[in-house]
Length: 187
Image (cartoon, rainbow, N blue to C red; front, side, top):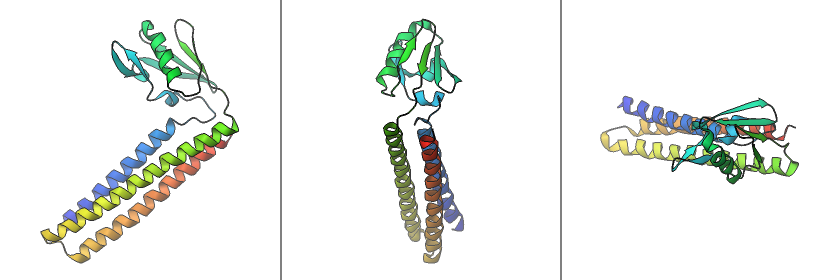
């Protein structure tokens, strides 16, 4: 029976770690002052009739802190990639020179910085909700094990462990958000 208790706690830990990893991935997409290839993650272009992420059809580099270059493997996709970047509404104006696309990353205005901080906080709040949902699901599963013969004391210990883990992961989300906010606000 104690094995099942450990399994409940480990599953919750794994799911909460996955939530943190997802948050970090989403925050990479939020722009800071410097150019970063991650800014174009999720942008999809038409590629032989299918929407394809541009990172799967080109090399994306940052030759300096204010520029991103996109060099497609198939030159015929230049126009589609340029259009996809413009339609992604990232605030970029891509320049197509016939062989690659150059994107000058403009400095962020104060208003835009505040908007990005708000977006980061929304991502953080989503992560906290996901962590709380994992807590709820894990606690419900632990309670369902009572019918399998798990003692009430063990169920209570599982709930305490899961709550402590939840608190730890919520603090981790807050720390990640503080760091990202600092990154966005710093000029």
